[in-house]
Amino acid sequence: MKKLIAGNWKMNGSLTANEALLLALGQGLERVPAGSLHCDVAVCVPAPYLAQVQALKASQPALSGIELGAQDVSAHDAGAYTGEVSAAMLKDLGCRYVIVGHSERRQYHFETDALVAEKAGAVLASGMTPIVCIGETLIEREAGHTEEVIKRQLAAVISANGHRISEIVLAYEPVWAIGTGRSASPPQAQAVHAVLRAGLEAVTDLFARVKILYGGSMNAANAASLLAQPDIDGGLIGGASLKAHDFLTIIAAAQV
Ligand code: 13P
Image 1 (tube, rainbow, N blue to C red):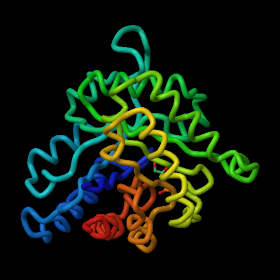
Image 2 (image 1 turned 180 degrees about the horizontal axis):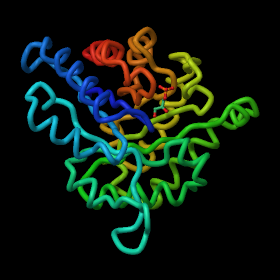
Image 3 (image 1 turned 90 degrees about the vertical axis):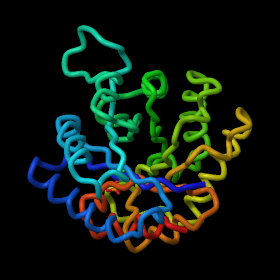
């Protein structure tokens, strides 16, 4: 299956910095001969910059291969929810992907498994692809609860979305690996991805086509070995997605 390399810019950027980063990515992608980019690429940008990136994509052919994504969404369709952004609005701005359930949302904004599952449903209903993040904390891993935690998080998304589970992208992001420079080792990540694949197999015949991304200190140096694992179908990249050279190196590592 085609891998997906998605950048999560988190709360970083400015009009000037975004344009410079995207133009550098476009220049790098232009060097890839036409038709030979063998992975999907996306950038998930802060909501206020979605329109800027949409406009840049429209004016720069080199950026046409980069899909646009958002980092969060409201579970509600519309109405009196001050500060929230609906799935329909994200779709309007050209989003193809929406990250839901990032551990930073779960941790700092108290998002529950049920809310994350509902958000995934809102994204699907608007014709976009949710990138559903799951992962254990260090305390949970050290207590031997990794499988239990990720199965619980996945089960909530399955129970709320039924057969549409085959249309989501999953991202395994161990919380202890995010922004720490301490990535999961390839075998550690693969072991969890295999559990997730088995969990999907139990509920859908289309389990093999669900992309399961790894995220957590993926960088230019470790991407190739992580992406070589049989159940790692791409990466969700934070810090390294803000540096054009590093992000392009990760994209190149996903070409096989
Ligand atoms: P880092 O790549 O900065 O560790 O962040 C990973 C992440 O949280 C992507 O969503």
